[in-house]
Structure formats: C-alpha cells, structure tokens
Image (cartoon, rainbow, N blue to C red):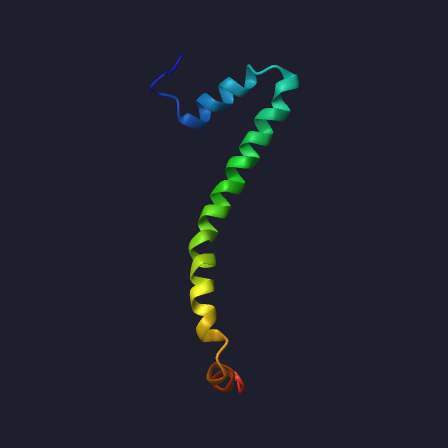
Length: 69
C-alpha cells in the first residue's frame, strides 16, 4: 500500500522489512547490481572519449609538448 506521505526510501525499507530472511541476500545482490550499473553508466562517456582522444595522445608531438612538465 502506497502512502503519499512516505518517501520512496521509506516505502522500500518497509517492503524490505517484510521480505523473508532467505531472500534478503537476493535483494542485496540486486541493489549492488543497480549501484554497479549506475557507476558503469557514469564512466561510459569518459571511456568513449578516451579512444577518440588516444589518437592525439599517442602522437610524437604530444610527447614533446608534455616532456618538461
């Protein structure tokens, strides 16, 4: 039952409290999966730009430009 005064987090905690103990490990695995997916999605743009930028990074003139830093 959804109560309009409860936050999503409070509703989730309420539901978790009703989950039988043997299933809690699965709930935890799912939460960890979601967190990992979010972290991976945040990294995707950086990883995609890395391959595009690596062509420039590997040029000899780039090595010379950064040599003295």
